[in-house]
Length: 447
Image (cartoon, rainbow, N blue to C red):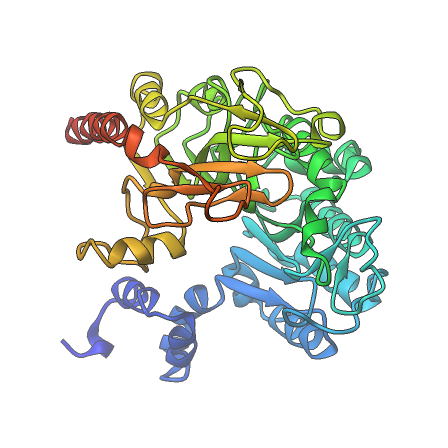
C-alpha cells in the first residue's frame, strides 16, 4: 500500500518509530500531511542551551502552537559544552526569561537539567578556575528551574511535572534549598527522580580528593533532606561516579520509605553492614532493581578518618595490627557476602520481576576475554569478581587488580603485599543464591 493511502493514525505511528529523532524532523519536509503527523514525535523533546542562539531557537519553537502541544520533555543545559570556558555564577537574563516560557508547554511531564561534569566545592581552591562550574552557579540554576516549575504549576490546565533528571549533579549539600517551600512545593508532585552525581577532582593533587568536606556531608543530606520527603516516587535512580554509602560519608537509608516505588537503580553503592541494604529490601513494591558496579566492603583501613568521618562500625571486626604488613591506622574486616544479600532479596521483595546485577565497563571487558557470551556494551547479570572491594584511607576505594580473583591492599611492596581472595572464597555460595533469585524471578514472570 502506498504511504499516501495509509490512515493518519497508522502513518503517525510509523513516523513515531523513526530513529533518531532527526529522521522525524526530515519527514516533515515530505508534505504538509507528514509535517502535521511528524510534529508530535519530532518535538516530544526540546533543548534549551544558554547562548543567544539557543534562546532564539527556543523562542522560535515556542511560537508554534502544535510544537508547544507536542513537547513532553525539555533538556536544560547549564553550560554551553562540557569543559566550557567562562562559567558564570549569576544567571544571564536570557536564561531566566527562556525558562519562564515553560508556562506555554501545556503537556510537559519531564525536565532534565544537565550541568558540566567538571565541578568545584564551596570551599575549593579551584573555584577560580574558569573550566569549573562552581557550586553557587549550580545552586542558582536549581532555584531558577524550580521557580519556573512552581510558576507553571499555578497555571490552570497544565500537566504536573512528574519526572526530574539531573545529570552531573555535584555532591555538595544545598541545605537552604531543600528546606525551602520552593523545593517542597515542586517535589511533592514528583514520581520519577534520576540523579547522576559527580564529585570534584583536584587536578594537581588527586590524593586530596578524599579530604573534601562534601564527601562526608553530602550522603546524609541526600538521604535525609533530598530523598526523605519524596514519598510519591515510583522510580528512583542514584548513580554516583565513585563508591558511596560507607566512607567517607554514610548513607544507611534508615527512614526512607517509598510506598509506591516500582523501579530502583543504584550505581557504585557500597554495602558494609548486614542491615545496610535493608532500606532497599523494605521497598516491597519494587518490581525492577538494577545494581550497577555495587560492591560489599571486605576490608577497611582507617586512621584519621575514624575521628573526622565518624563512620558506622557495627559488624566490622578488628584485624590484628600488622596483619597486612603495616601498622598504620586500624584495619577492619566485614564478613558480609552477596549470598546473604541475594537470599534477602528473594524473600523480601515478592514483586521483583526484573533484576540486573552487572559490573562497570572495565571489568566486563576483561570478563569478555574469557566469556564469549558476554557483550561488553550491554548490561549483563553476572557474578563479577569486583563485587567485593576494600577501602584504604591513604588511597581510597580499591578494585581487584587481577582478573576476578584477588585485590591488593595497603599498597605495600610486592614481597609484603597482602592478597584478599574474597571472590573465590564466596563464589560458590554467591552463585547459588544468585541462581535461586533469578529462578524465583523467572517463576514470577511466568505466572
